[in-house]
Image 1: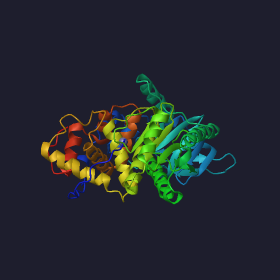
Image 2 (image 1 turned 60 degrees about the horizontal axis):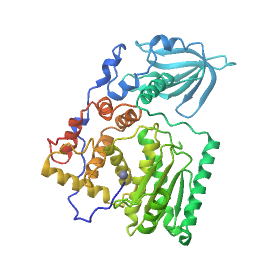
Image 3 (image 1 turned 135 degrees about the vertical axis):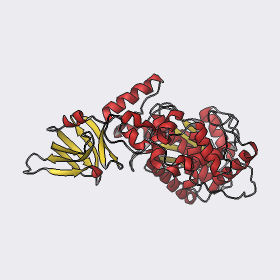
Image 4 (image 1 turned 180 degrees about the vertical axis):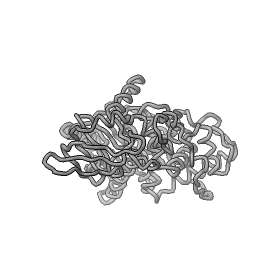
Length: 430
Ligand SMILES: [Zn+2]
């Protein structure tokens, strides 16, 4: 959730600089890849080899029919795989040759352009490894089965892909719900705005609504990019629902009436992430339209994080850190998140430690939001691909500490120190 902060003086704005600690880490997962002649040069490449086909498995695909997707979006349909060109390591391919049924000659497809292929109903992804100038072929069925099993052990699961027809049904269900909300607030003249991904229900004047809708769409796109979804992917169960009031009183009444909630602290917005995948954000605008924009993006980002890939909950500091980071990116006119970062740095300069009350806490203190977003920002800046690996690792059942180690080669203490260095506290401890 996002709460207002007391207005305070503008501190010196601190720009996060990249920490040396976060750069040039050796690949910690290299051990797993020792059966290959050539080793990947970093943690992202090492992780891409975890479910890669062996040389024999690659070879056994020759002669089979395949659909091959390339990076320009073209698909070679029902072609025969006639040959793989590999380096010395025969599991890593430089290019492949395919032949259409009636073609007289084969066609060469280069590893840099290969994205995905289907053979006998099995999906394979090509993982290009820049340091080796070759691609490994990742067995997605094997990978997903292994992840499913790991998730099941902790009572979590992948979110189902929802067929289009059912998506429409969910949207209808939400519209029924919103009708009830409209009836309850019949004096408010609530209006529904529907976009590709959102149902936005509000008593705000129409001309104020448009910019918020644009920001929500941008958030959707940027989070997809940061976590690893293709543009245009709909993550929501149907769509995400936003109920936005002008006044606080109406927000409180909504929470009590529809969620039985009388205790909202001093929240301006709340994200209701249901176990079945439904996401409903409620909020009120109050007197600061810029801050409200940031709140809206922040809360909806929680819904996105809930819906991403699997039901695995994301630890609070990461969840709040991402929500505040994306709010800062999408609503730069709100200085809120930057203020929080500055404030958190000032607090930590007094204590030089989180005192064990940050990385493993279920709730953050108000000032800690600034550290959460600053650390997320630092990790993204250091390397977006490593961040993707880190976030996906957690959603795939690794503890966040293990995922941090795999993606960045860092312990919690080292991450904390890297952050400390950017705010002038070289020995900051967790
Ligand atoms: Zn939050």
